[in-house]
Image 1 (cartoon, helix red, strand yellow):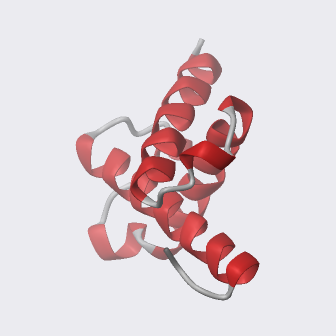
Image 2: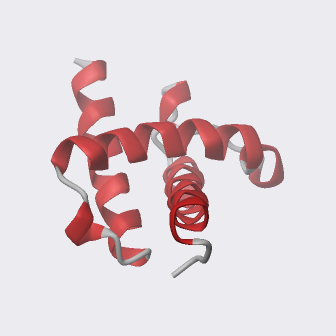
Length: 89
C-alpha cells in the first residue's frame, strides 16, 4: 500500500513541479510520476541536509519532506530544461 501512496504523491509533486517550470504541456502522467520520484531522490541528496528532513522516498510524509521532494523535482526540471534548451524557463 505504501508503494501506491509513493507513486501517487510522486505524481502530484511531479505535476506541480512541471506547472511551476511551465513544462506541463510536454509531459504526461507517467513522466510526472518519474519526475516526482527522481526529483525526490535528487532533493534527498542535495536539499535534505540543508532542511534536516527526509523525503517521500524515505517513508517520511511530513510537510518538510514534501517540500524537499517538490524542490528536488523543480531542480530536476530546471536541469533538464538547461540541457535541452540551453536555458532555464
